Image (tube, rainbow, N blue to C red; front, side):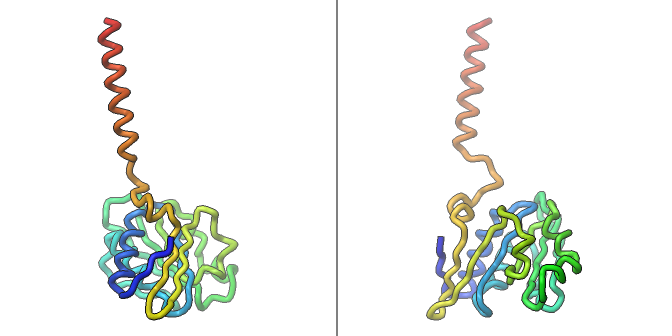
Length: 175
């Protein structure tokens, strides 16, 4: 699904929507040219996770870790930027795999091309483009169409209530 944003606030708002759907172990990649909104989108994701520190791109440090204070299954948020790295091997040497495969971490990776071979099919890939002073952000459909992945659908609860009522009525009839 392509979402068009026209301002920093709109891009951050989209990031907050995406962040609200993330769970422990999720890895999100952000691909796009310089200035396409990757770090701004990351700021919105971080806000949704309850991070209040300033988010900047870790271009020179490769990884920034933020502890999550919000009650969630995830214990930390990792912001990774592989723009200045030369290869996946360099990233492995820096310990990136320990973070990418940590089931208690939510990761956002800017410039993921260099570590493609380390990513799994469950990775949430988001592509950003800039066109006519607008950002076109291609977000996987399941992220925005079904935004509450952590909660059980209401239809399930209704089915469960009906089944409990049925079994209670059956139990009374048998007695």
